[in-house]
Image: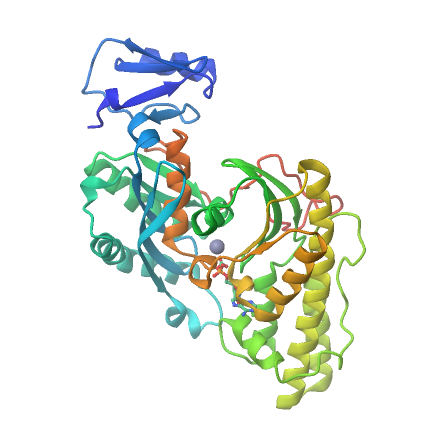
Length: 426
Ligand code: KG4
Ligand code: ZN
C-alpha cells in the first residue's frame, strides 16, 4: 500500500475531467497542487483503495522525490539486451550510476543472423530476475530504498517489453514503490543529462538497429522530431550489408572492421537524400546498390568484401552528414543554438561515424557529446535515469500502463511527405 499523504496531485498538469474523476473514485487525504500552490485537502480517508486507479494522464507528484535525492531501478528488455541498473538522481539534477548490469543476447541470436523476437522474449524471462538481483546487489542498496522502479515500456519487440514491464510492476507492487513506464527512445535522449549534466535544448541523433532520427530535445517529455528514416534504420542497413557479404552478426562492427582494409572509392554508391530541404534519411536504396554490386562480382574475393564495406560506409557517412546538417539548421531556426549535438544508439560506436559527426558539430558551431559506449547501446542505467527525471517532475504511471510495440517520441510527428505508407518509424 502506498502512503497517500506522501503524494500530491498536480491539477495544472492533468485534465479537469480526469482530475474530477479521480477525486470521485478515490477518497484520500491528498494534497492538491493548484495554481502553483500545494495545499492540503483531506478527502475522506480510505487507505484500502490502492492508488493505481488514477487515470493515466494525471500527474502524481511526490514531495520526497522533489526534495531529496532519489534512487531508481531501471529495467531494459525492448530488444536483445537484458539489463537492469540502479542510479541516483541528486536534488541538484546530477546523477550517479550505482550499478549497471547488461546481458547481451548476441550468442542466442547469432545462428539466425538477427534478433529472433520469440527467442529474445524467452531469454528475458530466463535472465531478468537474476540481472535485477545483481543490479540491486552491486548497487549496495535494498529494494526498500528505491524511490521508484522504471521499465522501458516500448517501443520494441513486444514479448520482451511485456517481460520487463511486468517485472517492474511486480517489484513496484511488492515494495510499494511508484512505477514509471519509460519510452526507450526518451531514455536514449536523456542519457547526456546523466553523463554530462547537459542543459536543454539540445539536438539528438539517434541511430540504432531500429531507429534513425534527429530530435530536438526541448525538455523532459518535450521532443520534436526533425528528421527520420523513411525506410531502413542505419544499424539495420549495416546489419543487412554484413549479412549479404557473409559477415557474422551483429554486422555493424564487422562492416566497420572490414571497411578499414578497403577502398572507399572503388564503388560509387548513391548518397541517399543528398541536398534535400527536409532532414530525413533513407538507407534501403544504398543497401540495394551494395547487393547489386555484390551479385555482379560473385564469387566475392576478400578484397571485394573490404571495398564494398568501405564504399558503403563512405556513402552512409556522406549522406548522414548532409542530413544531420539540415537537421541542425532546422533546430537552430526553431529553438536557437543547441547546447550540443548528441549521438546515441549502437551506430555511434562506429569510429568513422564519430569522425563525421565531429565535423558536422564543428560546422554547426556546437559541441559533440557521445555518451560512453556502454551507455550508448541499450542499458538499464538510461531507463533508470529517464525514470528519475520523470519522477522529479511528479510523472509516474499506473499499474495499467501498457506495453507498446510502437511509441513515438514526438507525439505530433507525422509521416514524411510522400512516405506515408513506408515504415518511416511508424
Ligand atoms: O542501440 P543498439 O545497441 O540496439 C538497438 O538497436 O536498439 O544498436 C545496435 C545496432 C546494430 O544494428 C549494430 O549493427 C549497430 O547498432 N552497430 C554498428 C556498430 N556497432 C553497432 N553499426 C555500425 N558500426 C558499428 N561499429
Ligand atoms: Zn536503443
